[in-house]
Structures are given as structure tokens and as C-alpha cells.
Length: 417
Image (tube, rainbow, N blue to C red; front, side, top):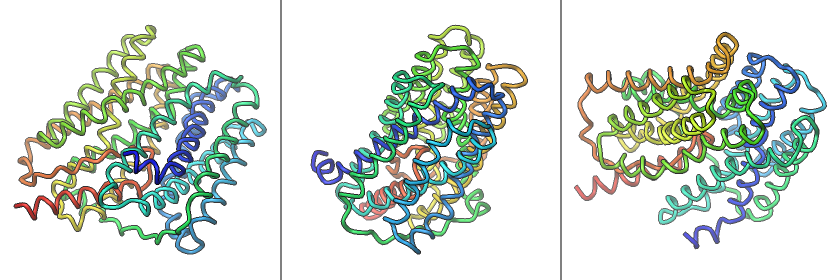
């Protein structure tokens, strides 16, 4: 692990700063929107816009990189991110913010694609798994630490927006100054949704639901906090609890994934998340209950991303695993766009509780559908150890790195058999 860090520390440091900026800007906008008297539904549109841009970039940025190169794309997108962050407090309007969030989502996805392709280029067959794990730890640590930064400035002022812009700008220095080779860039043509659904209905439906679950956490948790009249420190801790839970449960879920029927684990984690959301619905005025619910919802839902990819792989030949990831990410992106919109609508209709009602509904539906699929299909006779930690915040490149690990594991098992 030390050797992996020694060779890639600059890239990982840059991504840490980038996640500090991205993690803070989402929470800050949720708080600032309330201070500016934006309606809950207006804020849901603002938050949903990020995922529109993110999904669009996953389709357009790879071609852009092939035409003009990694460094130019990276530098251009970085400039746009810094500029939009500074414009937020200057142009306080929900529709201007919506346009800005589309651009921010596009740019962050493009930056992730570029950085992760450098990460893949630095990896070897021997260290790819460790490098991917280090990258995921850095990403999650950055998002968690970002919530603490919310407390060092006044959300109604300019300072925090300037801080985010500075963090994002600094993040590019270690990456660009340390990267010497420009990697060849290729992405796999995605499998059609129809073909993917026929291969793994649970994988497809689960990824769609999970997109809504994650985007509600990532975008609407701070909006819930302000609507529920939590204090600024409470909002910071509440949002961080989702990601701390993800860090705590990622390894145990991954360990279990390679040792039991993955469908049982999918149903179990979804059910635990559902129960946690129900507890929050009935205990929304008790902060410790909200905190515990956020911890378990984040802890159960985030590992589901890797778990559903691994489950889908169980029904694929190694040659098809990489192409399947594109279709799964597209379904996840569609769910992510709709998640904040439905959450905002329900919060407008019934109040802050709507946040947890949506999470409970999506996790409950995933639990029920998982049970249903267990009655329609027997356990896969493919015994692979293909779980690799991937977060919903990553791009298609990181998922394809994880798929390479899955392919290697499947090929090794075939050879040993």
C-alpha cells in the first residue's frame, strides 16, 4: 500500500482537495438556498441539475478527450468550475443556480473521467485493486471533511464560496505537475438496456432506484436540515453521517458479498436502510435518531452500488462485464436526476419528513423487488469474487477499473477450474 501511495500521492492529494470542494458546495447551496428564501421544490430542481450535467458528461467528455487531449480538457473544465463557484453568491436566482449546477455537474464528471484515466494508467495488475481502494477512501474522506468546513464561515456571505473555488483550483496543481505520460483513452461501448435487463433485471432496477436514493442524500440532505430547522453544526454532522456510514460498512458488505448469495445481501442491506428511514420518519424531531438513521441509510445504500455491479457480473461472461457497466451507470444517472425532484415535491407537500419518506419508499421497493426476483431465478452457478469498492460519485472510468478487477478474478477462477 505504501508503494501505491508513493507512486500516486499527487493524484490522490489532488482528488482529496477536489472532493473537499465538491462536498462543500452541495451542502453550502442547500443551506444558502434556504437563507435566500428559495422554495424546497426550487432547491430540488437546483440539486437535480447536477446529475443532468454529470450524466451528460459521461456521454460527451470521452469524445472530447479523444479530440483535444487530457490536459486541455482537464484545465478547461477546472476553469469553468472555479468561475461558476464564484458566480453563485453574485447571481442569487434559483434558475441561474440550476444552469450553474448543470455546468458544475458536467465539469466535475469530466474532471473525474480525466483523473481516473490517469489513475488507471498508473495502475498495474498487481496494484490496481489497492490503488482503486485508496482512491475511494480519499474520495469519501474528502466529502466527510468537507462538511466540517461548513462551520468555518458564514453561509450567507462570500467566504465559503471563495474557499471552495480555492480548494478546487489547488487540486489541479499536484495532478497536472506530477502527470507525465498522457494515457491512451478508450471507453467500452455500453450494452443495450434491453439486453442488460434480460441479463439482470435486479441489477437494472436496483441501479435505477439507487440513483434516486444517492442523489436524495447528496443533494437534498442539507435542504432537509434547513427545512427541519437544524442548526448549522447539526446540518454538518447530519450530512457527514451518511458518508461516515458508507465508510464503515463498505468493507463488511464487500466481505460478505464474496461469501453468500448476493441477492440476500441486496435485500438485507435495502431492508436495513428502509427500517432506518422509517425510524427517522417517526423520530424527525429527535436529532440522535436522525443521526443514526443517516448513518445506517448511507452505510447500507452506498455499498449497494458495488454490490449490484458485482451481482450483475455473476450472469455475464468476462468479455461482457466492461460493456455492462455503461448501461448500469446510465440507469443510475436517470434515477439520480429524478431523485431530488420527487424528494422536493414531497417535502413541499408534507414537510421535511418527505425526505425520509422518499428514501424509505425507494429502499422498500428495492427490498420487495429483490424478494420477488429471488422467486423468479435460482442462484447463479458462477462463483466469482468480483466485488470491488466503487462509489456513486465516480465516473465510468473508475467503474471500468473495477470491472477489470472482476474480469481478472473471473478468469483466474476459470483457469483454476
